[in-house]
Length: 327
Image (cartoon, rainbow, N blue to C red):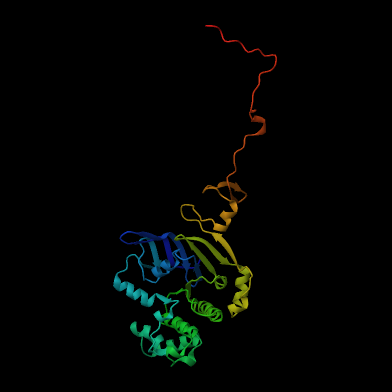
């Protein structure tokens, strides 16, 4: 079994204001193995970006356990947290302006994180050139951002996030502000980084078509992991022999879905399945099948026909009813 790089156990995050308390995460459990490429999906407000911010050291958990590369994010000092954000994680934002400095060239932007981490010099320059080549923008080395397209800027942002060789690359809606062709290119780039460098990558995305091509997709609902989709073995084999995700942009079902059961034996049933049961309240009936548990809507209890009581009961004709004695 591969080594766990990220371990979240019963993770809770509560935001408090003077008059309001919002529970963003409600006991989230998730393990991400070293070298894995996975996506996290969920509706707005489900807690996915909150979780990503915690992994990035941008927010503190309220309760539970959270370890990244053996580091306990609950016990870190502010100084340790700065080092963690520089060396352990790399962050790619939907708004690439958060990654880029507009008055620097592409090459200088990539070098900046290494300079801040004390890695300037020959090794830093060599890595910056390697990353420019990796994202396919060596020809734009000396260009400033104003002369680059949005897709090119996002690719430079990915190179910046990788500058200090992070253990895990975190991407929050990295294709949200680019066209579909550039989105495919970015996912192909992630796939290459994962395959050739063994880079661990966690992506938060709403793009269902692209999330179909990662090894694992975890769905968050109401602050907990509700289900996971795992890439089918036969599709993984075909993907290993394919360079571009674009070639697999089809309606083919590529993943198998699994419900996730927490430590208390609870699981979230997909909404569309519950709707088909036409439940009148929140109760379901359970029974054991052969290696399975069957859930069904409660049925109304009916009185068997042979025990039904007639609406009117009459005495037989030859039966005399005794008179009431006189006082």
